[in-house]
Image 1 (cartoon, rainbow, N blue to C red):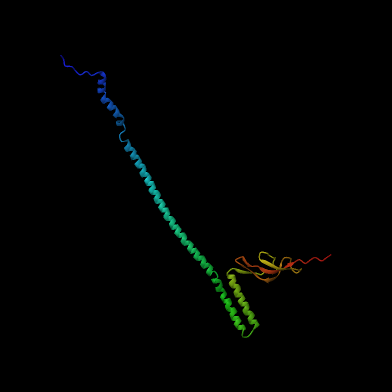
Image 2: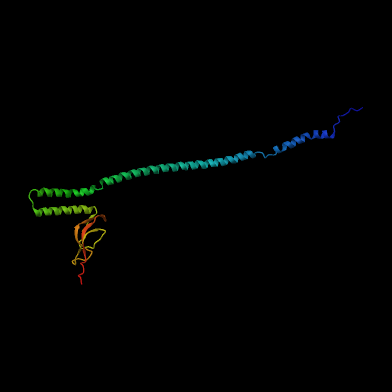
Length: 208
């Protein structure tokens, strides 16, 4: 008798022989991924990150530079504001310094004239001294742009004259200044005081 061999049916053999191939097939998709793809993606992202980091560093540097420029400009403007305020205060405080310096000789002349008149009155000399003092005052005022308005025989100007009365007359042109009651003054063409005047008016026509 021949020794009997194990009797394996065809289904059992197929399962036995097919065990390894099925294992290989199940492992194939995992093994088929491209090698180094994740490493390449990480490398690209790293380059983009480095570029963004450089741009951010440059932006921060520019922002810091602009901030320093702003602080410097702000400090300079603050110093300029303080200097301007100080100059304005000094201008208000000492604006009349030169003007009063020019008026001092006028006061001196008046005081000397008053002292001289208290002893013996000489009308001629007193008049001469007053006239000299008045010229000194006019010169001082003229240096600072102060000019008188004395509009005798001039056309009446409501911008510079103040009519005190209207007098009918045929001795002067109508609407002209006949008499100056009080002189006016302008400072650098700006009216300080209008001249008070009497204005000529056409005489009434005789009744027919």
